[in-house]
Image (cartoon, rainbow, N blue to C red; front, side):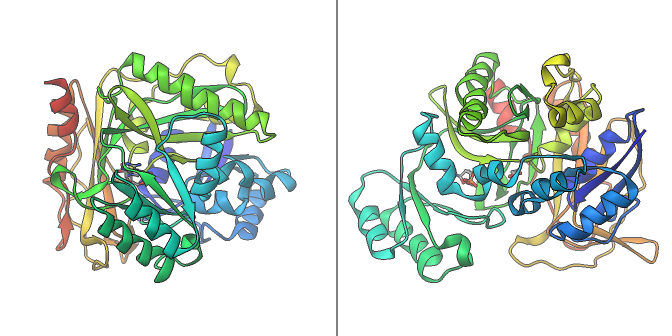
Length: 421
Ligand code: AMP
Ligand code: GLY
């Protein structure tokens, strides 16, 4: 049996560990640093690569990295140098997420469909461009900005303000020293996540996130307020198109450029008139998409992680999925994605039912109580025979959980129901 070290603090990491815990091949699962819902927590921050390597070496663990930060810092390269087993992309491969400019140029030279764009480091030139185009723009900081470095604009004036925020006021520091101005594409957004061993890439189940903070996709972007899987928005023919023209092409083109992409590859897709455009790449599982996807996965995740590391995914059968739908409602603290209170006691966590599971994110344990410790606090995830029943099951569990400043969207999955009607 193999012991595992899961790096990260979120609902995604709790869900990955929860799934691995069901494998007969997996022994003890450690979380660094974990949260109030995970056990065997090790207090090492996600960016302390030396300490993580020392721990993984002492315990002889396989390491699974949840978030993008350590990947972009080169945790996989460092572990490989030390002959430690680790799942995920190298620093070079992680550029697909860590530099939006790198990703856009990569897509351009390999003819992967994405919104047209220009790159600027000079505010005056950027503003002149914003005034000169006759289509709405999205202004993006180049580097990692915890999901906040993207401003979707309606008018040239909004774009000019966004340029000021990122390039002049440096709201995202060095991550915003260069920006992308790209055409806004209006359509249906969905997440397409696949697993690669550097050559062969297989799809995970489809899903759809809910990025904005308020119902009906209003308000600022967040890390994601809820997700469900599968999504009817990506039918079989669209899935095939995304797999061929985006996912396989990306991994093959990277290989052609000398970079083996191993790990989860996540394409944020905008569907416009049935055509998929890449809005962004992530080099990791989505959060909260991971929670419903893991709940539906029948196959042993451990086998697929090992096959990605060892480069033999082609020898495994396709992943089996439960036919049911899974819905994850994120319960957050009021104020997120800006400032919010912490340390509020969470009640109702012990109620149990067969069809749901509460994944923890921003929680911690203090004196035997579970208290809030972050913006996104819990991912209440439930299965149902239909999308409608999965939504009902998730919200009935949500109703049993409370803390002073709880906040959640009431319309998770509604986009899928509307698409079906
Ligand atoms: P990103 O981090 O690049 O995915 O951007 C965050 C969010 O901004 C996406 O999930 C979309 O909702 C939105 N977005 C990004 N790029 C575009 C675009 N070109 N057109 C419309 N919306 C976009
Ligand atoms: N849910 C969006 C993300 O993980 O980036």
